[in-house]
Image (tube, rainbow, N blue to C red; front, side, top):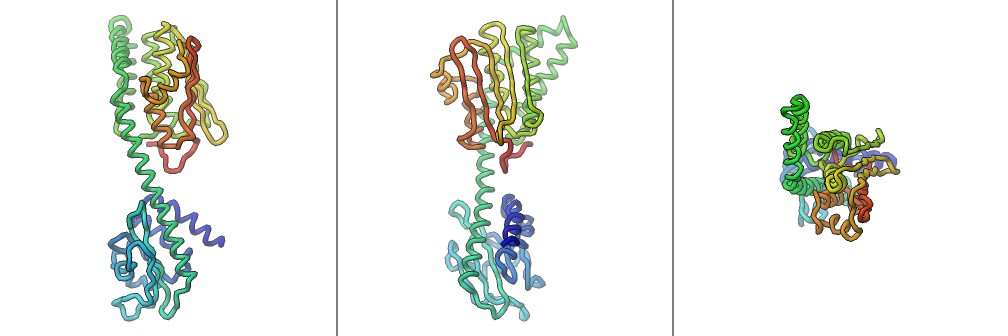
Length: 355
């Protein structure tokens, strides 16, 4: 049992990468251990991707063994009393072929082969069927990860399309105001603006580390400080152990932009606090301001996307699509008493990787 558990544990990460010659070659050794067969073939719908065990002198990746031993119905396990092999000295006899099904579609097969003269037992067929389900489940997770990432990319494109023209205009106006009086500062601000927009629009994976996101939030705030000077006060309190947490790109910046717009612009001055801390297996990111605030009903509308706002609903959707409904944003606010937005996300989530 310990050997089987070890084989399964080692095999799973390879299959989470999808069904390919490379992943099959790494997984098939462990599939043989799990099935206790004389040989195992793992393949897609057309050909063997990897072969391990007896008969490997003439059975290999690329041959048509799965077609010969394929289930009578593609979605059902099939027992073959004797494989048909052109090699006269082939030591293999019976085989059990089990389909790999992902989202209701046949994507391949696991074929367990046994020495000539061996009889297939009910335990053999049950074992191969369970192994095929395990492989199918890992391939299904790979598909779900890809689907989640495609959705995250689409939502990121939507956010990029609505990045505040208000911010772009004000940033460029602030830079223009420094050109004659403080040309060195103007050059630095223009560089900050270029780097921030490159970060926001470059074609990258939809996830980054919190350290990266904070780096570009600081560039954004540098541009806003050029407008407000000492009227904008910012306090950052970030626990070092959370810096490598993976977050959706442009997830923290929209929260900070809203704090600037509603906590500083509408009062002419204000204070923003950004806190990142470790809570058990999760991470909390808190953005608070001392601005005009809003009533709780308005906060609920903003979070759902019915009340406008700079990307708040978009950030909420991306967080929950990536990490599940247990994670996302909470808004605490009251009219005249500022706003606090808390983002909760897992410190680690398998399959969610930074660029």
